[in-house]
Length: 256
Image (cartoon, rainbow, N blue to C red; front, side, top):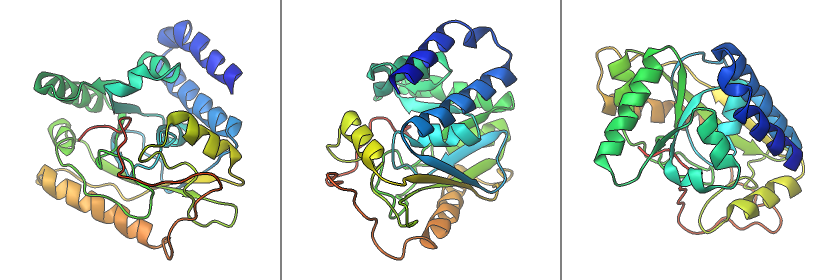
């Protein structure tokens, strides 16, 4: 994994900025898929992979971004806490992640303008409208603010459901980044989990014409929630030596 991160740093610092956009997207997808392999995580995609629009998904782990990028490379909006992560924060900035300074209205306005510009340029932009992480047993309420960027840019909203399962395809907590769990504790939980799979289901696109952001947030939440309900007959199974307790609070999640 260390060598893979080093390769990412070297590529991001040298070749990545000079490559055409299609090549950058390919590298982002390939690097993300290889990171999952290094961690022992299998990726399964379902549904039609979106090429552009506002991708909205439920949020469980810091690994969610790499799972999505491995299938549908996107530009993500994240809280600026990620900038302080060793190596990954620097990489995120170099590959075009949009960051938002919490508590700053001016920064929020700049982030909105950047989102609209990215969407208007025909790119896929990813956000986590729950605004925090959960253990994956339900979808928390969506904040509607960022849905406005899809309306302003005139693009569709692309809902996606993220799930983590064990070898028996039961819901797994191994990747959950919640409560007081540190990044390195979460990494250890992931690499020691046996047969961990992340599943990303791309759902039906939602048109933005003639609706407001609250309607978009509600409808997208319903689509993801209904998709999740088919797979949650019982509580997620906790992995060994990993305890997902406390109030979900993920400084890595995109603010909405």
